[in-house]
Image (cartoon, rainbow over all chains, first blue to last red; front, side, top):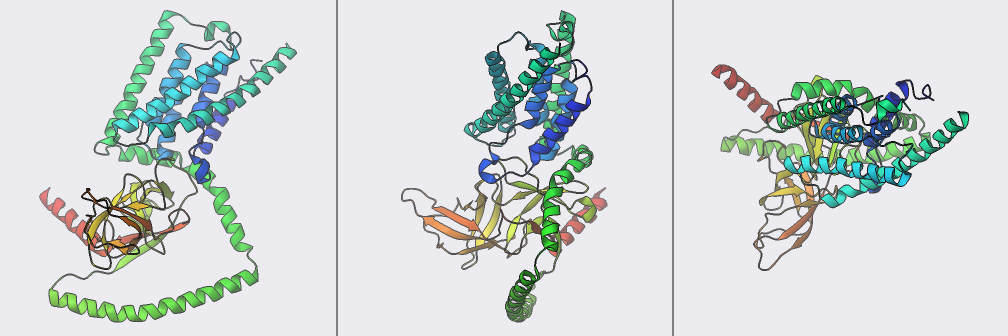
Length: 162
Length: 296
């Protein structure tokens, strides 16, 4: 089981894919619903394999995202740092915690991520209505559930093997 | 999953280390943001990072440009003939207008010479491709595939075949970031082509609408009026078309009217844009540089 996620390749590849998905063109009517791929993937690995990546990874990914999307240098980095810190400080024990509770925690973290972005935007004098910020939280939560389903399935397979 | 000892709570020292790391890294982030927001101190850092993430941009853009190239090489002969015919007609039309323009230009130059004002209508342009990369969904920004190596500079105007598109706000070595005139944080000085009324066109965040918030109720502006760049800000070259007035609503009791305009450039459909080097501006930049070097 440890070998399955033992390599660092999978997290690295999934983070790269998240960066690509973060800037892939989407039709305009759905663009507001683009999930925060990087945040979702980082949270996923923080929950599944907390010792594989940490705040330095979050910082690096955040800076890459800042340069790619042309936002203030450090904005996404700070938002990612905050959620990864919370996730590491209060690690959800996925074997014990009920799924509903885990999902609630993830949604709260995703909302926190948007809140940090919103706060930085506001401080820097860029106005984006807060109401527009809920769409990515919703879609990110959906993606997270999907990831959770995969995780769940994978866990069951792993249990069967044991 | 790893051993429970590693994931579970951990010792207090562990938590302390985590907290210290978090605080120091977030302070770094905040410092970066402040430096980036004030003064743009981080241009070099941004450029280095921009090169580092360049492969990702290329990877995202590749399928789109490849599809473009493929569809270009696979167009049928009939389509090519049709397009050729259409282009021929357009060229004839354009040539016809150019003839008139040539006469007007000489007349304009003669009149300007009489008035002793400098005449510079000489603009150098470079075609740039818009990268198929989505930026912040709340802002109207895009990347183009030209950078410092092509001589692109911050504040450079972007045009398309119909009119003004936007301006450059950030330059990397191989790419540059541009903001469209319809971005909610963008405003450009315009004037009504019919009577020379000067005002400011502000972006709305909607790529098909501009707002003119500073037109008085009594000002002479009508639906269908063409707005052109007034050249006052020093960014956009004088006289290029910007938008058509779509709606004028006088509001009794208010000092300003509600005026909405529609950009003439195909902001949401463009794949290629023109970078403009304004002769006027280039010389003024050169003069600035000379003055600065003299002062030092």
